[in-house]
Amino acid sequence: MTNRKKRWHPAQESDELVFAVCDRFLAYLGKQYASEDEEKRENRQRGAASAVAEWVKRTYGRDDLTRERIYPLFWEAMRRQYLLLRPPRDRLLSRKIVERFALQGRRAEEDAVQVVNVRGADAPYHVSSAAADVIYDLVHRLKGRREKVHIALGAGFSSMMVARRLAQRVYSDLECPPLVLHALSSGGFLADQPYKAPVTYFGYFTEVLPKVEYVGLFSETLVSSQEFDRVRSNPSVHRSFAMADEVDIVMTSFAAANDPHGMLGQFLHALLEDGAVTQQDIDRMKRAGWVGDVQFRPYSARSAIFDECPVRVVTLFEIADLVRLADTPDKYVVLIAGPCSECGMLKTEALLPLMQNPDLRLWTHLVTDLGTAYALLSGNGRA
Image 1 (cartoon, helix red, strand yellow):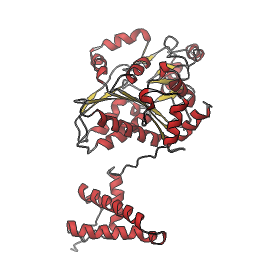
Image 2 (cartoon, rainbow, N blue to C red; image 1 turned 90 degrees about the horizontal axis):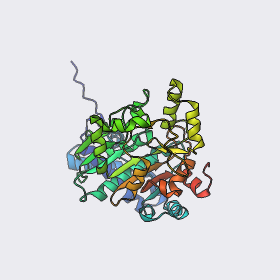
Image 3 (cartoon, rainbow, N blue to C red; image 1 turned 60 degrees about the horizontal axis):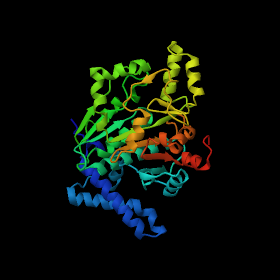
Image 4 (spheres, rainbow, N blue to C red; image 1 turned 60 degrees about the vertical axis):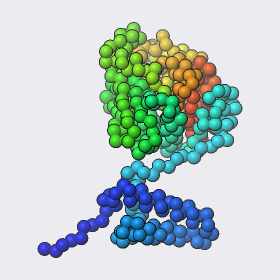
């Protein structure tokens, strides 16, 4: 029988070696970029791979990791989520937004408004990545002030992407304090969209090194206003609400009333088809000035909308609660303000009240994209 040599594959290499190769390669490239002229840059990548292969041979005694095998280790590093790009910020636009909307206090701090220098179909993804980075920095800001840092996760596709990125950031962070993750809303979402429920995001954190605890919220998703207090008092729900005061950081997005992918609008449409609400109910909300919702709580340019909304989603915080939280020292609300993650529609008209009305200014940190930033500064909410 012929003995066949086992075929090499990058997946067989240890975490230590994969990371060390990538770290060495990028450091070498950066050094060479600063010292070489344009003519020599053509061969820089090949030279870096050869240099790293020689270093691996000296350090690990591995003469089988040739220059050609260095490159596949980068793909392996991507698969293992070691390489995370940080989207660039436009500091000038951020400062202009702070000045344009006369933001004061913590909302005027250097990192409070972040404009991610991206646009197009990938903008929602990069805005979510930047929002996760903001939350990661806030977690470390609270280290030493809290025994555990409590983070409440909102619902929706953008929030799901934030949770995944945040888990990647804390994955091997030995300096990260213990975390407690709270679900902001209940888990019984539309039957074909269970992945948008906050409790499903907990799975991203099962293998991270920092200690992580969880506080779910399990109840009926939609109840009438009259039933809301009864649901909150249920034993399975009461503890979740009782621990809401411990939340340090809220991560949430918002939806525009005219966005067909907004979850409150989808709920109402499904209820309309089932006969649980009427078109008159929805028209009443529109007459009240419904422009958007945060955590399924609708609002107009003037205030939150209560009586005109025929149903209530079970969620930890009302709009007024988030406003108070944003005004509390060492408490933070991070608002994801990018385009719709499913169709790319700007939500500027729904964002403007959250910028202009102090009674709706429910955030301490706002993360948005170029398109939304330009629309805010142009004064054209429908841009």
